[in-house]
Amino acid sequence: MWQAEHVQERLRTLYPQCKIDILGMTTRGDQILDRALSKVGGKGLFVKELEVAMSEGRADLAVHSLKDVPMELPPGFVLAAYLEREDPRDAFVSTHYASLEALPNGAVVGTSSLRRQALIAARFPHLHVQPLRGNLDTRLGKLDRGDYAAIILAAAGLKRLGLAARIRAFLEPEESLPAPGQGAMAIEIPAARADVMALLAPLNHLPTALAVRAERTLSKSFGGSCQIPLAAYATVDGDTMRLRAMIGTPDGLHVARADLSGPAAAPEALGLRVAEVLAQQDAQAILNLCHISAQEND
Image 1 (cartoon, rainbow, N blue to C red):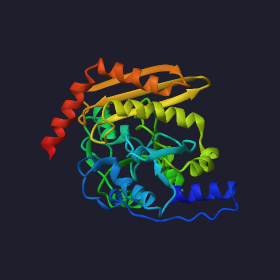
Image 2 (cartoon, helix red, strand yellow):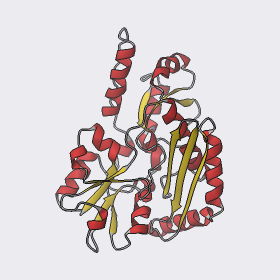
Image 3 (cartoon, rainbow, N blue to C red):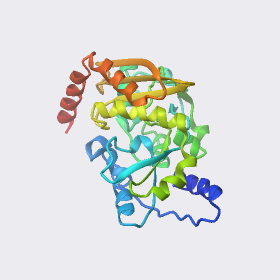
């Protein structure tokens, strides 16, 4: 809702003559909180109802956290604009501890992300990672009740909701590489709505758009699913883009990494090159291990 209101305010500033209403909706991804997202349908659970509203003419656009948007959109829909990225880092949140390094042996860390689980397991095998679902208030409430010694959240969400004070430490990309699109917001529209596309053009932030296109191309190369621990983070410096990526098993025992640079104007090409480097490190074998693990847990 914060994101929708933010876009509403931006559009009102650009087009004061327009009436802009918010159609509040609760998606399946918001409703199913007792199971890991990877086990109940994945990223599409956060967007399907919104796409139905647009196809029925009840809504003209939808605002998403980009990391929740499937890599393949349904026919008839496009991402029309990418807003300037907020802090893409993961955040360490704890009542009693200052960092992951400070957690004692056997401490329970909560996260909803297989990516974060893999990265934590690789660096801190003595910690126990447990699933954590729900909105920010729910997650923080579970931490405060003592269900977890610490939880890992996206820094962007905490900052946007005025909860930055809860962050005890930021996890830099070198230690916790972000998810594709993390920290970015995207606006989805029906592909036929050229009028809406034109209205949204001023909101598109080109460096963010280029970076997330590289990240999403890479993710798409490996299936683009929340069921695999995949990280991808691109940065743009002038005409150059750097893309770092990781694929690993949830237990952190098998990891492939890549770090390449290329022309910022060709983000998809860089995404494909990085995918090739990961493939050369037996990324497919790692994915197969992920699928076996998921079946065993089911």
